[in-house]
Structure formats: C-alpha cells, structure tokens
Length: 149
Image (tube, rainbow, N blue to C red; front, top):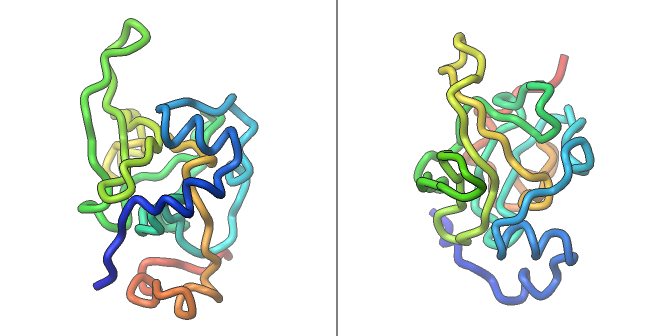
C-alpha cells in the first residue's frame, strides 16, 4: 500500500486558487471548477498528497455547481469534521493524509446510491484517467472505475 503525505513540493506547485481552497478551506465559485463537467473514466486524487479519493463511477450531476460524488473510493482517505462557520452547521470533508480541504458532505444525494452528496472543489483534486491509473500506481482501484457508456 502506498504512503500518502502532505507534500511540500506539491503545495509549492499549487495555483493561488488551489492553495486558497486546499490550505485555507476556501471554496471555488460554483460552476467554475475544471472537473465539474468531466465524465471520463478514472479516479480523483488529492492534489497535495495523491491519495485516492473518488471514482468516476461514483460521480453524478447534482446541479449544485461543484463535482458531486456518492461515496469516497477509499473511506479511510476522507475525514469528516464538524464545520460551524458561516452561521450554519455542515460536515467538512478533508483528505486524511494531505489534510487538504475538499468540500462538504450533505445528506441529499441519490437515495439509490446511499443518500450522500460529497460536494467537492475541483481545485482540491487531480484527475487520473483510467488509461493512466496502472502507470501512476492506482491499479488497485481499476475495478471501481467504469467506462463511460
């Protein structure tokens, strides 16, 4: 099993927006994320640590303006924390090893897929296409990625 850590070199390569979102718990503007409309098969990993977070087969269109997933690909890589900022109570989602702010999880996802909506900032993610997963060390997750039909 790979070891994932908060990589200072990866942090140094972040764009200002990626840094603001991942390191300062920011939120990208709705509808602006580079991965929002991505429908290719593959996995989404933490842009800082590389830990696998979500599979394309669990991504769905929620209409909220951010990429939405029904569940993490590896639950141990996603931490959920109470967030009482902005005058509301929510559950923040962070990568476990990279400690990157990812977004929030809400109980209004598709019922037939567990009922959760992981609302995630594109700026926190790097997409690894299915064709590159084996070469990048993510071959163990190929069975969780479906080809788009």
